[in-house]
Length: 131
Figure (tube, rainbow, N blue to C red):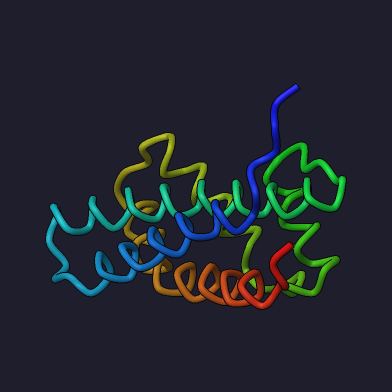
């Protein structure tokens, strides 16, 4: 049996990654920086899920997949159901599959929305009292 990771420990990493994600979005739109922003999105998304899982485990809940993690955040009023997390999760999967062309262009165009969604989630998590 593994020892659960304290949510605040994972939240620190999520916060750091979110800052790097924002920095990547502020770079000029070149092939290199576009790739860096997409990679940073993937890394930050992974940390968002890990952080959600840590908070859920602290409350004796298990998120079996990404959708159930986001549904857990909706149930806790950290995100709204129509906040865009479903599209973000789909685009995350597309980045892992190394989509190209117009799909990648659309995902890149949506990255600022995803940054704001994850930043909102982080602020909700930071408001939770430390145990």
